[in-house]
Image 1 (cartoon, helix red, strand yellow):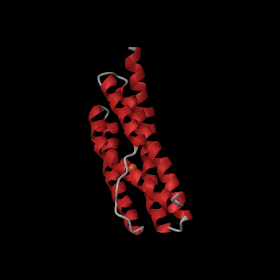
Image 2 (cartoon, rainbow, N blue to C red):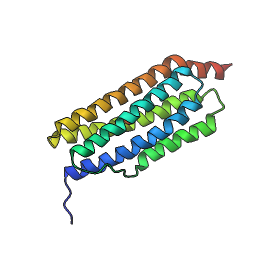
Image 3 (cartoon, rainbow, N blue to C red):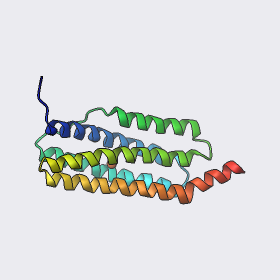
Length: 167
Ligand SMILES: [Fe+2]
């Protein structure tokens, strides 16, 4: 049996999140298009720009460990995004769509936060403090995006959905 190490796990998960970030980058415009709430549209659009930076940071980390930047299909993010697309299909014309989009966006952010949290811990264990710092910059942006979605949900979206549904 081939012995695998934490380095291998780090690389495997790096490829996984690299795939996920690229997929998220392609999906965010659909989410921005699906909402009529300006704050939410803006949040998705701004996060897409940040996501471009996340892709670039990952490429820097690949370079730091002397590996070619390569994706590995991530079934988890494919599933989360497919659910979001299903929400758009099923609720796109209803008052509930925006709160559905907030939830879909948060599912994506939470997945990323879990992955980056682990990658940062492993990078530190492997003595790669520069990579850990770089990945942490991205983690902070994911956390900020998640928090913004919570705020938009609470102040701009949820009440609106309830009001319309009650009417
Ligand atoms: Fe990201």
